[in-house]
Length: 295
Image (cartoon, rainbow, N blue to C red; front, side, top):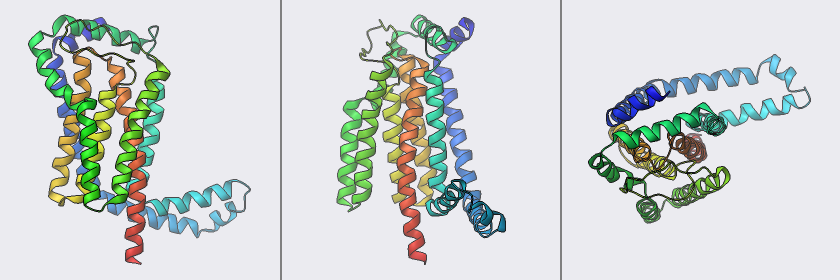
C-alpha cells in the first residue's frame, strides 16, 4: 500500500492527466454508443413491454396480491418516463449505493482510510511549491465564490429565455445539492488531512469533498442545459469539456492535500446521484411533452 501511494505521489500530475484522458475517452465512447443504439434499444424495449403487458402470463400475475399492483405500475412508469430518464434514475441509485459503501470504508482501521492517509503524506513529500501553485488555478473553478455567481447567472439567463421550469429546476438542484453536501459533512465529521504547504488553506469537515460535488453538480447540469439548447454538433464537445473540468477540479483537492482521495470520490458519487435524479425528472417531462405532441 505504501509503495503504491508513493508511486502515485511521485507521478501525481501524470496520473491526473491519465485519469482525465481515460474519463474523456470513456465519455466519447459512451456518447457514440448512446447516439447509435439508444433510440433503437428504447423502441425495442417499448415493444417488449407492450407484448409483455398483453401476455397471458402477466394477466395471471396481475391478480396476485401486492405483486400484480407493483408490476403493473412498474411497467406503466417505464413506458411513461422514457429511456434517458430511466437510465439516469438507475445510475443515480447505483451512485447512492456506492457512496454508502465507500463511507463504510473510510475509518482509520479500514484499508481505504489507511490508503487515504498514506497517499496524502506521500503527496506532501513529493509535490513542489510551483506545482501546487499551478494546481490552485484549477481548484478555484470549484470554489463557492465562483460556482454560486455562475449558478445565479445561469438562472437569470434561463428566466430571460422564458424557460421558467428549467430555471426553477436549476436553482433547486444546485442550491439543494450544496445543502446536501453540507449535511453529509456534518453527518460524517471526518477531519481533513494535514496541509502545511501554505498554498491553500481549507477548514471544515472533509467527507465528501464540496469542490468535487459542486463541480460535478454545476458543470454537469450546465452541460445538460447547453446540450438542450445547442446544435447536435456541439453536444459531444460540451460533454468533454464538462468532464475535464469535473475531473481536474475534484482531483486538484487531493493533490493540494486538503481532501483525501475517498472524499473526492464520495463527492462525485453524492452529486451524481442528485444531479441524475434531477435530470431524470426533467427528461421524463420532456418525453411526455414529445409524446403528447406526436399523438
